[in-house]
Length: 424
View 1 (cartoon, rainbow, N blue to C red):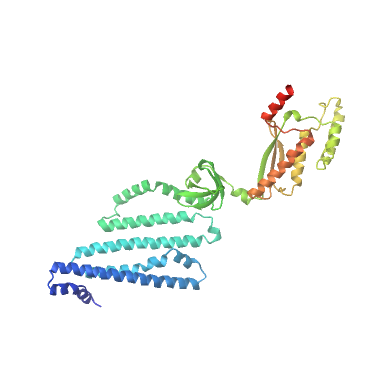
View 2: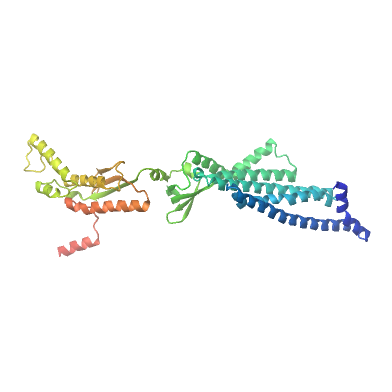
């Protein structure tokens, strides 16, 4: 159908109204109003029809393919956005005929249609990005990557480009000029400072593998202690162990210090590092009868016998006067207890014997002498780890009296009450 016929159709109502006696201006206005209503109705109906056709076509296609990419396209409303272009094309073409008598109105309306096309194009682009993000997150090697950050950056650029194009369309101002770009850069840097920092940080986090989704992190500055559930452009979302959520600025991950427990989770064991405080005045040299009694403890009986021979040989060479225990070399109850604790850990199947294991004597404090247990449990699950650690210290604390040792404990009110009662 040629242009002359379209013009004749668009002017039909105007000529009709003039023929029946209407003022020419009124006839033009009525013609435009009725034509607009007609075109809008046609556009809406076409939008509904084409949307259903395109959406159903995509669904049928996705059912026949094994890939999930097209399924995510449907979920992100990609077919729906695409279907909106058809009524827009119709509106664009009919505008010139409807407003034939108003050339300036044609320019304005076509600019409005172009603005709508720009916005619709951004929405289509966003739909593609969301689809790509959802699809990539189904691939195991990308599940712990901050894909959301890159999507947000691309969307910022997309909306920024759209805004520049709309401004250029409305004002006809050349935004490509150096001065305009300089001013725009200054505005962008000012407004999107945090976004730019977050973008740079998210790249560094990803490239340097600082944090992944699913990592357990502790960030005391922000009160975060839990698993990372989301990494986006501006923030990192952490689900704490009390099921609350903490948002940490992405830039803080490279600007501040935090603790990432991934190394522990990927290692062969989880560290146990805790001390028992022994009362200093309970430490003593062991007499022969004391050693005989301790030989009943199977874990340390071979050690005591070996040390007895070693100490006896040394004292004979030294000709030590053993009428006083302090002379020569002697075994102490604390030293034997340390050996017992180490032997107990070495026999414990829940402790990883391939990793470092040590029972050490720390510097004396006003609360006693710390005997520190340092080892690694096989099981790294938090609740199991705590049970293993508790079982170890339950046993060692209960074993302390067998070595004539005492655990330091600050006096309580009941202790002072007993002292007062004894003094009366």
